[in-house]
Amino acid sequence: MNVKFFLDTADLAEIEEAASWGALAGVTTNPTLYSRIGGKLDDFHAHIKRICDIVGPDCPVSAESVAMTRDEIVRDGRELAAIAPNVVVKIPTMVEGLAATRALADEGIPVNMTLCFTVPQAILAARAGARYISPFVGRFDDISEDGLAQLDDVVRAIGNYDFSEDTVNGEQIEIIAASIRSANHVTQAALMGADIATVPFGILKKCVQHPLTDRGLESFLKDWEKVQNA
Ligand code: G3P
Image (cartoon, rainbow, N blue to C red):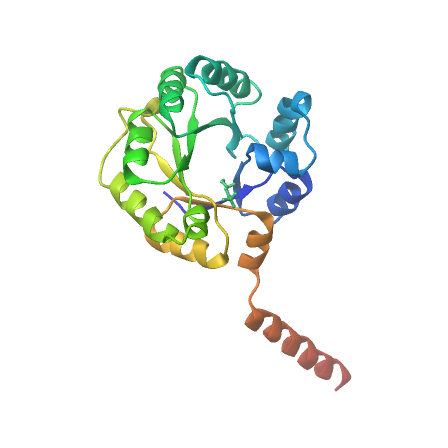
């Protein structure tokens, strides 16, 4: 399995730009990100379809259900999954969410269990049949706890076992390092062996840049000017 970048956004321009760089392997959205771009409830499904069209069928697009009961989440999940074959239903790690994940996984619908903070939560998500599990890093840092250490625990615990009997079509679970706030979070997630880092566009841009790259470019250009004037 390869380490991959997902973009954590609902902004179509950002998705188009990141896709053009050739390294975009998926998109994750959530209600906050959708509201940030002025999203309206009745346009939500159409918006997810637009994202799916931009990234193409090989890139999973996580669309979150905000329903609170098993049956409502399952209904939402079926509707979301019907938008495009690459839609992944994003469901919070809670009792009703686990039950809905089991039901959707049994129907062959992939689930990304989100708002996951601990190893026991991740194990429950795995046993419920989640295709992706999203441990949050930054939110731990926000409360002065070590989000990277928690991510490391989840990566190692899930990596210890084979959950292929629980997942859709026996696929291997992928861990998405989420709530990523810096390029260093991405570095550490990759060193720990997380399968995916889902990052806001601003962080993705920071991952491309380095001051020494900029300085190197400046001196190349200066020297090239000298060559041209020689
Ligand atoms: O994918 C989850 C992510 O959107 C949460 O990030 O920065 O709101 O903690 P953040």
